[in-house]
Image 1 (tube, rainbow, N blue to C red):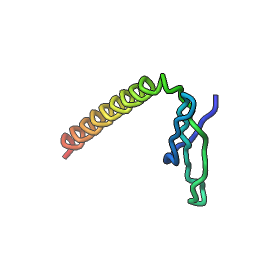
Image 2: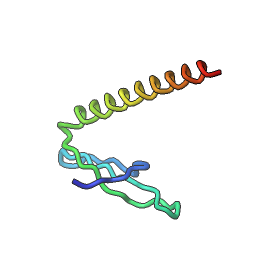
Image 3: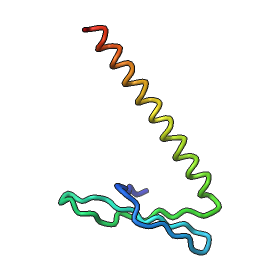
Image 4: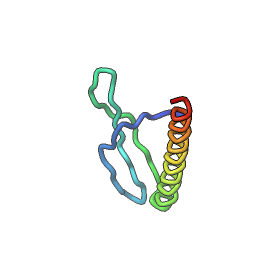
Length: 78
């Protein structure tokens, strides 16, 4: 398995039933460079996107809970 850092997306192309997403990362010098290509069967795109959306919603929920706990702790010590 490889790891691909994605800071932005350069291009999305559908060709022969395959979606190719060209990814960009920012290097240590601040310049953008290609970091890889996500390749997804067009038949699976909906499921992949729904999984990513669900995961991001769960992360957002956890971050809100964590912020609330920190606010309550800070209010208790004030």
